[in-house]
Length: 281
Image 1 (cartoon, helix red, strand yellow):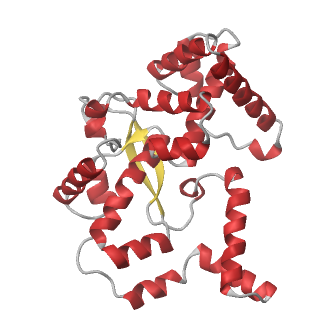
Image 2: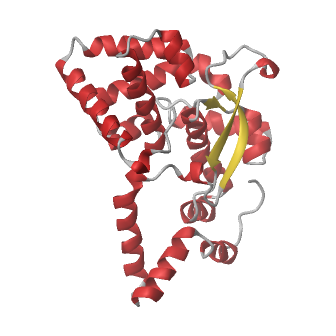
């Protein structure tokens, strides 16, 4: 991602090879409307159907890549060779939005705008990226360049730590981050509010809430933490933290209300054919 900035004409040619442009073109030709009207239809479709569609990275959309990363529950000091690994799917290039950033602000801004999101995507799939992953497998720059980018992000966004494997000890346990997201939902915060505050994607937040809801359902069947951890393929530490949060719900009417709403929503979705594909994490 280093080197000279691409010419505007190069990016303009790339801009017409996106799913958005294909959709707008189909609408223009099918309905005989203007590009502006086609873009308005696309925006409306996204607003209506986005909550019912999985993340782009999980559907193999253009701009995605698969990567082997370290399981998020592995301790930071454990040798990588001995760590459990996970295959994650990452949305690296978001289309026209990233083309614009690259053209107007350059490769440094592009990388710095993507690093945190890429790490969050991996974390939502219960994995943690390393500097080497970002440098050699995703952004194709040197680890030193990634280190400079991370220093910039720490300086500009001190309250939003990047969930990189080497930073887990500095930012606190990863499970604390997930529990905090669930608690915000139980306090009645909206998806938009949680995403803005925690700098997570809607898909990542939905994954955490789904795991918590299944944990609560299994607990209601008198299952032990080890059993729940095994069935959900999660660490016992995370499950124990979720169970502690469940106990707190019993002492707070607001938390109880939103917990009941969350569980009721999960029950309704189980009865819907479109929810056969289970959302994990």
